[in-house]
Figure 1: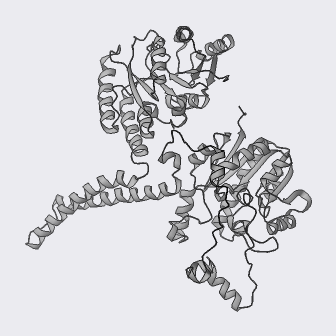
Figure 2 (figure 1 turned 180 degrees about the vertical axis):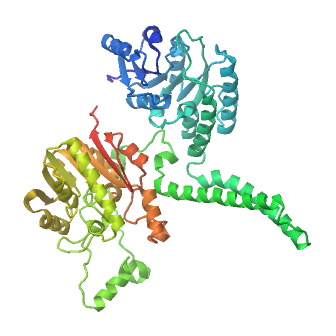
Figure 3 (figure 1 turned 90 degrees about the horizontal axis):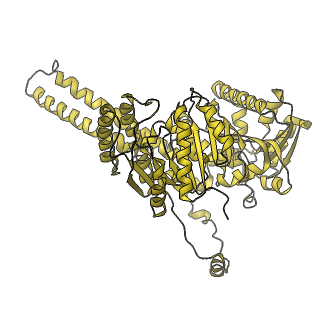
Length: 588
């Protein structure tokens, strides 16, 4: 039996002090008549008129009322985003707090959702607003409906209802609260419209002016880009680029014929126009190609498709079908593999070293399944024999003589030390500690804590012990072994590790069990890393992508990835990395 409410009423507000008591009373009456469990979640968007105290009084009197206070006014999209993260009901109803939405219609919205809709948007068919608001709104709604393909009459109406599955997949920021039906429709959710009763404003005044219309059209272009063209930005920029470029080329061809027949064209404005159109077209196409590069390194499967449900046979049936062990697929014979694959990335260097009599490290057998996927900084090092001494990419990076790289690494260490100092842990685990460079940096920064470092590489741990000595406990161990031993720490660090792990989502529950208070995570900001690699002429055939990086996150994408299990407390800009200090979210 579920102990969560069936309906969540989400009400963002800004300076609506006089409307709050009546609004709460009407919403409560409507929910009581509905006969279903409910909660009312108010998002105070930085009100300055005393609304915060009124909401706190409501929360103290009514156990079904919850209140979230913003530090300042962040806007309606941010208020809805905060609410969507916190609602607990199966159906989410959003309303404005100005009493223009009639709470008596909550029942109608709930019935439409129960009938199969995923999102029901209100339509204020008869509005009680001045003409300077209704006319721009009609124009805006007509343009959005035409360009987005979502046939609604009123995108701006704040009275909407959603299934909980729908709001979990909607990213709301900027001015995207106007386009939630468009975003949901793009994900494949069923969007419907319901005519609502619109009432005249009783208290206060509207917080929106004429500027909202211009902001809306700019946001519309952004929505089109992140929905229809999210996976093909070259189409978004390339189509206008080709049109402008075609016009420019036709003009230049025409002028070229005139020049061949002896006409002077040097002072014709048409020549300037043709050249200008051609240059602008090249810029459009160049931006589109750059967008394709960024998409290739940052796109996530959740942005490409949305899964409604999955079906498969029962586990017992599948076990019976696959009872016979499958044969192990071996590697291709060496004489059939391409020469590059037989030599490896550094085959020529190994060959030269062999000719000069230097011994080269040979790869050992793969580690136990699941272990290498959970720890180790750098996939190249995770499969090195325990007795082998070999310079890892991590060691090369920290001991680089490049002054720019040394400056970036030094700043990375300073920011990490500042975040650790902010969290003030007494025990710290460096998961995938490598050669111990970060533990050494924190000790040098005066961090007073008990340090533990684990890694799967015997060679790396040996180097770490030589560097740190007895100031930290260092072991060859994986994360699951720590969990099985019941170990936990005030802070768990995992710096530049997650980008190497094939299944990073499986690592987050393990981090939650190991970290009592905080985690400190960092990954490369892949678009910048790829661009820097291209500038250095590195990994050109992979468009700058490091072959050891199996995961590719931008800053916002990485924060969304960990948001389900951790609450981000700080995310300083540590170019070209994303570094995050977070704490585990309470378990349900």
